[in-house]
Length: 601
Image (cartoon, rainbow, N blue to C red):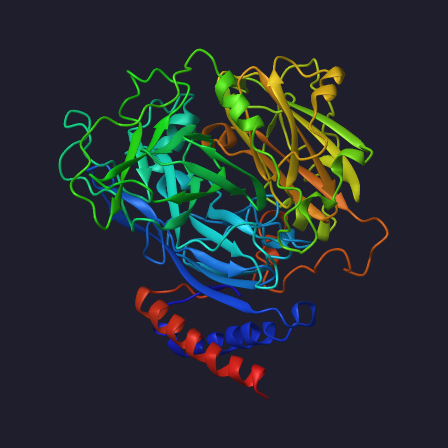
């Protein structure tokens, strides 16, 4: 469902709307999703002006909201998201942690999708098959997340599945992340010119700047986030680090954080007074309002592994406000861990996060039913990153000495049309002793194989690695170089299953993943600067015995074409703002009519 509209073509646009609505209504009766509800979202991705740190700047909004709306859905629901790109550059939305079973066509990264050009729209359609938990979406191209464009994805349990804790009195989503006053285009240029991004200008909470806890560090007049609560009630806080490159320590003054879930897995429930949340990670806590409310309380997210006296401005502060609060917060912020020169505390904290093996998740069978520790590994990849290097006169980052250079033709489309030379299937299983180079080398994953990946971080900053399409078991991490003997330290029983894991500088993290979903799947750092400079790779998973689309959904009829296949793309009509509103209104009306016909024939 692609469209470019113009105000002088309203009649043509109306015909297009009917066609689109027919397709959307037809989705209601797709046999592959029979019985599972549909959730529809109509989003305009556009710029708005905001001043989160007191300086007006251009940010990316979703449906005129910054941050974007929360996508509140339930296990196995089908999701349809119509995205209109009102930016002045191409866009793709990716769905961090959503696995897109058999359907990498909807993943929203450059290896699977052609970007949505300015003025065009495209409709994502996917199912949150066998998933629960806390995730988020964001624009995946060219540091756009540094300008916003992110929002939450809450996947609730079906009513027939027991949740391993009582129903909270409220559900609160909090986006935390470092922030620059410079536009994302300026940040891109800095990286292109070989410069470092430097210290962020602050930390945002739900798109807002810090409460004025310090009159020297925080200017007057900044809008801050306030979370309203009631004494004696328990709330579920879903925390997402949607920032650029900074690990943050999260804490709520005088309150315990009972960890219950991370990125789709219920965890062993344990209390933390604070927790390090690295870029791209998501956690759920239960927080009970058990204080006397003599005043409001601070909610803090501050930069980790930095000189705090120099980075004091990189602190986000929101307010926890009891209904019976007796005054404003005024005391010093709660302390962060004091381990600038010793990261053992943070690593031990990460190791303490374990899976609740007796609880069900999306299905009633316990999470521990998949005994990953007894499965034979079929492939091993040691993926090592280094500090930025110079390749062809440009600063680049690498994995195993290869800096990923995205081709103009998405990898999955190249396979579909048998276009040769777009990529190579020769990604090294270990770092090679050769000069770093640009390349589009892909990991050749074995369908239904069990892969061990060791992320070796030889850089000086924490790197957070993410894998699209899958959740992996985090089985070990330690300082130094990984060796075969390191396997003796692996957790082979209750390692947490998640999609994003931190790798400390001068350290390694090992994960295990079952390659049971066909497609091209992106493995990347979530740190935007090192990702932009090439620190990523794709895993290709193909079922060689299937030619009938049983293990992969077919290419969507609405697929966008680019690169070697650009001639296949049909010409569209550019939109105008008035026609856009008119057409979207017609679209929703037509959908309601046609949906009622589909449901009540």
